[in-house]
Amino acid sequence: MQYRKGIDVSKWQGGIDWEKVKGSGIEFAMLRAGYGRGNIDAQFERNAAECERLGIPYGAYWFSYAYTPEMAAAEAASCLEAVKGRKLSYPVAYDFEGDSVEFAEKSGAAVTRELASAMARAFCGAVRAGGRYPMIYTNPSFLQRYFDAQLPREYDIWLAQWPAKPDPAAPPAPATGMWQYSSSGSVDGIEGRVDLDAAYKDYPALTVGGSAPADTTEAERARDWVMKKGISDGTSPEAPATRQQVWVMLYRMNGGK
Image 1 (tube, rainbow, N blue to C red):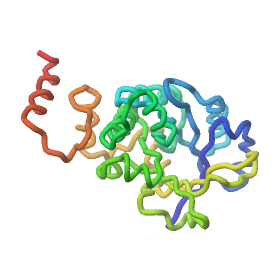
Image 2: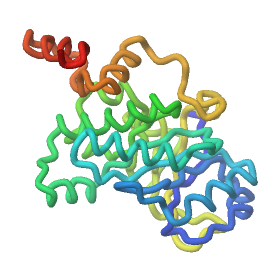
Image 3: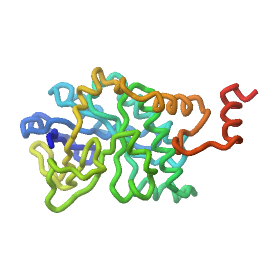
Image 4: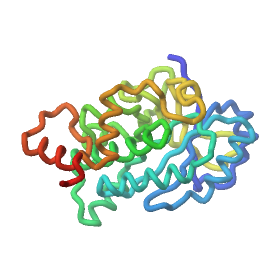
């Protein structure tokens, strides 16, 4: 399978020599834009500026500390603000990991599959509504435990799975968009280890001008609309609705009158 070679970085890589990175054959980068409630990564502005200066295609990700769908949507808003005016040609990813779950539980929230799926949809829906291409970063265990089966059909999965001898040309099936196949890579221009990634879609073509793809389905656009309007949280799109749920949605559509 054809793929493009990439890395993902944050402030933990320090001051990167992006000219050397480009010279090493890296074809794209995913940059941490920030985390939690509006915290911008200390190296994001520099990393983004250097990628643009050198013509390195890049996207962004936001490490989530949300424990409600509303918080996840607010994180998406912070991420969109951070990348405002930036020339992204790769997705904006929702990063949900072990620390995300631990923080939620310490805050009194039980992270169920329903809640995690709703938060992912809230973030990705807001990203798409903001004109960017959404994606979900997760690992195989979390994909099975925390996200419903419909979610990978709605959004590309950036899968974190690190086998001893990875073959980027043969990605695991869940890696529908990208595969982070190593957490201990070595790239010229970066001190210490760095995550290595492979992208399996032509994201620069899909995000012309930094926008989300235009070929979303009517059902996807409808789901994003009801979430944006507060009519529904967008979860379990294939599940039947009770009459009471339909009444509530109609009530909300009418402005609560």
